[in-house]
Image 1 (cartoon, rainbow, N blue to C red):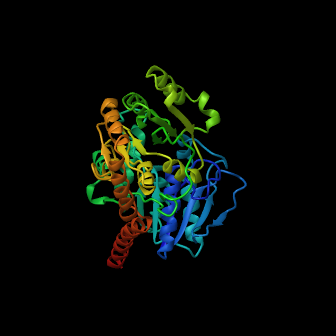
Image 2: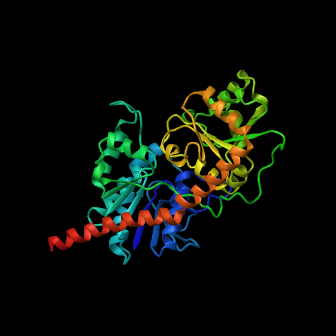
Image 3: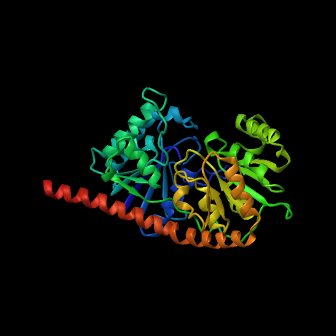
Length: 400
């Protein structure tokens, strides 16, 4: 099957020493897994650097095409929308004028969806949409209201929406996407790269290490983790994510977290590492006794899954995909969101119980490998492609 991945803002090309975002990794790994299953996959992403070639062939067999839509440099999210018409026009021309017409277009993020639907509707190519995140908590007329309107319209216009969790599915239903158009397929994890075996980041062997990973935004709950550290004497908390280390001193969220650590009298046990290259992440997970993921508003967290694949138990809040990734009492512990005391109690209990940590780690590793392999995810997504392409074919034959 010929599959067009539309990912205008997240290229699957290696990011070098730069941190690789979750969406970029998702596109790269899903595309590679689909290619391994025998599909012909092309990824269409916006040219954001004038030195990029028109097309790049990856070792997996996936081809990446750089679409000239807007200026050839990085743009903020709000600036991308105005260039989606040009993106769609280029797609439509390319599919019409070449001998490569996709059987399915799979759009990632809402702006990509607008381009995909616009390009595909005149050619009869079915469209699958993955939002990765949807606008939440918006008030009518608020700053995200227009985005919610686009997401609602897209959810009704495409042939199928793939949500990554039941929580995302419920959010899409709430904004008006028909339940009949929704299928849940979780994200996968690269169990060849994220493994218990391999080098680990340096650490003090006499001090328990609690790791937390993600962008430095308030809803990720890093403040709650720092407050919870008051109830876990002797343990250190290492936060990986955000801007590069050299920029942390001027980052507003980093300054807030450091000030909070001072107020809680745990500053000597809190370390902000900043963003690190994707290749370094397995080593950071391996260095930890446990991972904590304590967001109060999130749709899918990749870090718990990666930690589990490295054989690291997880303490998390029952928010978004975490509620499904972690099996409470088997692969980790779930605690109420925005409750530093309860979080601290769970962390202290697990830090002090080596036998429980080992049992959780063993079960977490098995769950990550069995339920979240990219081969399994690609097979499930491929079944969605089969359904939508078969339905379009049947409809065309009925009209004929």
